[in-house]
Length: 173
View 1 (cartoon, helix red, strand yellow):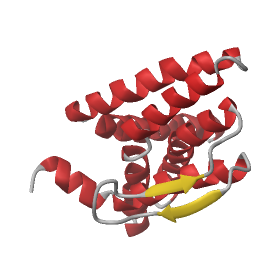
View 2: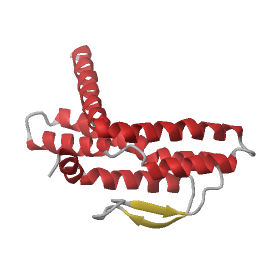
View 3: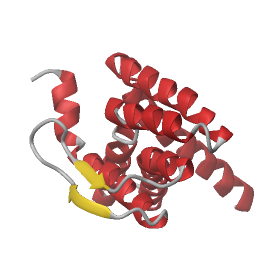
């Protein structure tokens, strides 16, 4: 088993968090969800089938939902790991946080949907132009994942959270 397969196996909770991010933002934007698969063995590992969003803003939020929710979830887990320093809970929270951060980036399919939605809404909403650079960034990140950018992101989030918490504790001590 290679490193990438190992990471995908141990970060299965992050797939669930990723798909929940899509569903959460469907619910927030009032886009009807038809079917949710939070995890399965296969490709894709999970998915959310929903109605076509009426606005570009809905599409943007649904595509970026896993990144926003996954990052927030990871930061909360890392924060809790700090509270349970030295206990088993510390490592459980670090693992959950890393799982969320590792899987928070939108997929190539998400980028393709955003690109298409940008084109569909461009005549009615000039802000739909934002979808093109976001789609490009998603594609770039997915190529960088071959260089373990997703791993680096999870580790950097942990150390940033840890550093901020240490500074905060020193300030209030």
